[in-house]
Amino acid sequence: MIHISIHEQACRGCQLCADICPTKVFTYDTSLMKAIISHEEDCIGCLSCSYLCPSGALHHTDHHVVKNFYHDLEFLSRMEKFL
Ligand code: SF4
Ligand code: SF4
View 1: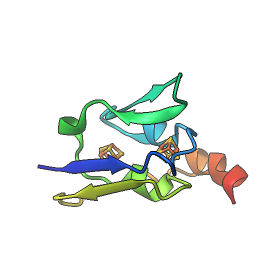
View 2 (view 1 turned 30 degrees about the vertical axis):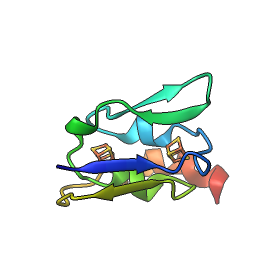
View 3 (view 1 turned 180 degrees about the horizontal axis):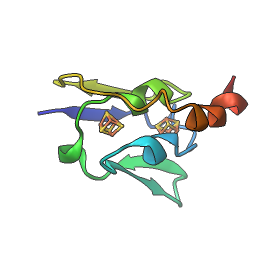
View 4 (view 1 turned 135 degrees about the vertical axis):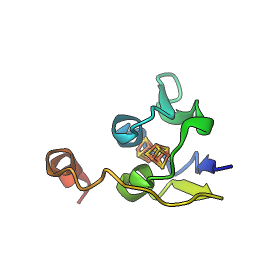
C-alpha cells in the first residue's frame, strides 16, 4: 500500500498538492498553514503532487506509477511565482 509523507518543516502551505490531487488525498490545515494527508488510502500514485511541490516536501513509497496530471498548462502557470 502506498505511503505518503510530508516534510512538515519544508511545506510552505501553497496548497498546490491539495488542488492537483485527483482523489483529494490532502486537506489544508488553516491553523498550521500546512497540507495534511487525510485520505492516504485513496492515492493512485500519479505523483503529480510530488512533481509540483515547490518545496520537495512530498515523498511516496510502495507505489506503482500511473498517469500524472502535472502537465496541465493552465495549472502550471500557477507555478511561475515559485520559479
Ligand atoms: S505542494 Fe508542497 S509545499 Fe505546497 S502545500 Fe503541498 S506539501 Fe506543502
Ligand atoms: S500521487 Fe497523485 S493521487 Fe497520490 S496524493 Fe499525489 S496527486 Fe494525489
